[in-house]
Image (cartoon, rainbow, N blue to C red; front, side, top):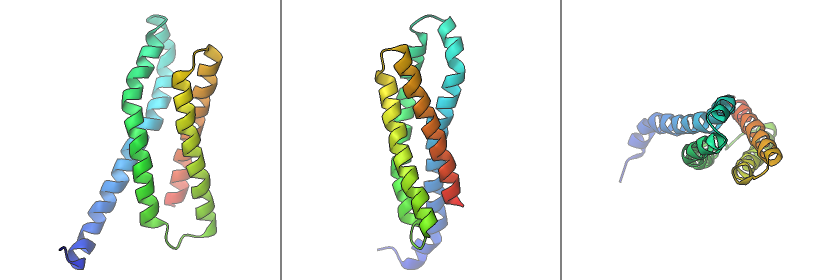
Amino acid sequence: MTSPVVLAQLAPAVEAVRLSLHVLAASIWVGGQVTLAGLVPTARQLGPDAPRRVGRAFARLSWPAYVVLLATGIWNVAAVSKGQGTAWQVVLGVKIAVVLVAGLAAGLHGRARTPVAVSVWGSVAGVTSLAALVMGVFLAG
């Protein structure tokens, strides 16, 4: 059994791993969406199916990143929520809702078949993902 002293010594390393995984996953999920949005006009020039193929390739990276974000987000809350004030808790609640909307919108974007639906759900996914990122910065304080 590990002693409390050893656990206390490992705590900074565990925290660094937790935060690094969360930031890496956010970089892929949010940064990838921003990057992909900038690449769509060029992808369209490569052929009518190119944007969809590029989107599917991105999904193979982004959905695992989203799962890591959810897992490390829960880990983050468990690690730092004790003793936080009401304002922090409200922001956390809103962030959780926004993260779930981002995932739902991204899923609907991937299933959309009309140009309008693709645009609407892609925009909702992008805006809510960026909003969740900003709220994460607020929560980190």
